[in-house]
Image 1 (cartoon, rainbow, N blue to C red):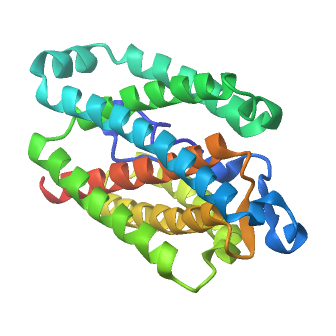
Image 2: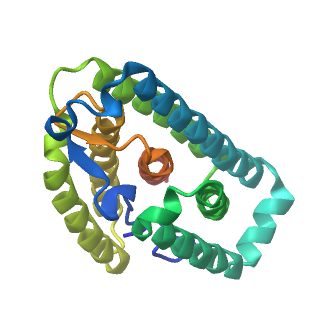
Image 3: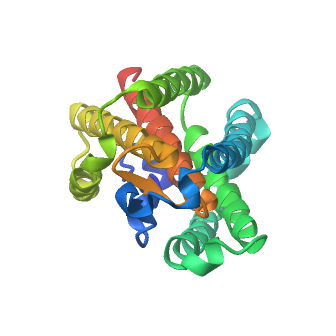
Length: 257
């Protein structure tokens, strides 16, 4: 699946989601690594800091695009008149996504992993900005605010919770497949209530993914992500947050019609 961009930008409501965890397994059970470096607290903290630093840069770039595409009238008019740029960005995004998801050695090779992630971030940022340009300014601002509150709350809850959300990853992946199939239904059935329900389920699903990926990053549950995979971890969290934003934007946009 892809992050809310498998459809015409004119109808951004019908957006299937993508989750970065669809690639090859980068997870492992902690029981197998009792004496590994991952158990060293300093290594884990350095890994977490690196991931959140990369994630922060990604989000700043993306929401800078959103701001420009929302508030700059000339830019908004340009992207609406040149929809081919959307599909070019999608192609670039898809190629970089495949490379980062399927080529484990490449995404661990510095600095090319960061180059690929930068290309992915820029192409995805353009698409997110283009989708946002079709909504009212008030709707975009509201969606950004709600997304920030939701993500901040989920991350804090995941940090404090004793419940192991990583055990739910398989169930969530099945739900993601169902959501992708449902997105095709929304493309052919133009119904406001159906689209709001679909977007609500999408936002809920990726909120759950965010909780899982946060705990995979921390490494203190049954499953953890390798400390070598900081690009992959950042990609997972980034796509979770972007999908949450897009689905919330869809909900706000539809309810304000």
